[in-house]
Image 1 (cartoon, one colour):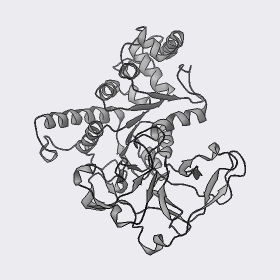
Image 2 (cartoon, one colour):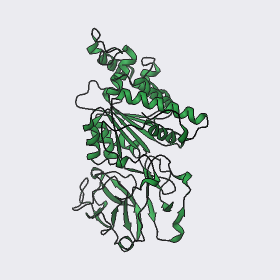
Image 3 (tube, one colour):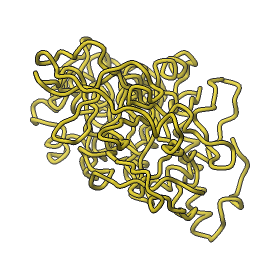
Length: 415
């Protein structure tokens, strides 16, 4: 396939603060044929626009206006999307760093960034305009997703339906390929994952290198720790039976962790001996726990300032090369708002950012897509079934690979 090669203006795109900032120059030497081995096999490949097309070749430079005050955007500022966006500066088209929706394009010391309005300082140069077709120097590549010949998963074309079959084998291959290539898959989970007895499966994914960061709320950690200390979640046993005094066990779990000083210290002291948080601590997997107005406790690591929590989550969403969102409406939508719909590779090529949203309600998955996370693939099922089955398919795929089978020869039928 023929792609426009573009000069990277950033270090490793998986670094914390620089995901994609590129400049395109209309020079024939910048057209390079990439071998298929460089294309991520299981997701849709994206293409850059044809900058030699008259409407883009003759487009004006984008206009930048100084922010009138700290945290205040100029009138007619350009509001970003999560799709590939290009800005013309001094005759060259650039892609900004840290792409996300609902923010502004900022030119800072000749570097182009996407920043939230609250981060702006008076005098910051902000792109203005409303056109997305390049006529004002800003082009949003809404047609960047290729056709059937270049990818199989195609999140963008997947409608949400309880009746739709779930291709667990494909999701398993994506997870394994992410691990093999050193990607950064983030998992966003709700407490139903713990209550539904999918806790052991989540631990398995953490211990086997399929989780690069965990984003969750206070309740996930609280009930996971309650399960470790008391063998219950919300006072219920593994068989769903209520226990005497069980309504207060999660509070006792919180108190033990607060007495230890942190989750990590509670693990070190032997208070927490298994479970999701225990695995994160032992494997060195970063976790972000964000607060809610309804939280008990909360646990020491929970970030109760919403803006600080958003910043902490963003440190991982800017690195994300895949996202798995399970049984959490608010955290899923919050994460989706911070994710781009694409990943830019070191060689300048782009692919979809695989985003899997799992919930027992079609409403949650549809809401995520309606809020702009176009690439989200909805799986309407409960957390327990999803985690159990996905783990089995990942194990099966690993066995097939170890035995030398190709992707087309993998064992078993699709779920």
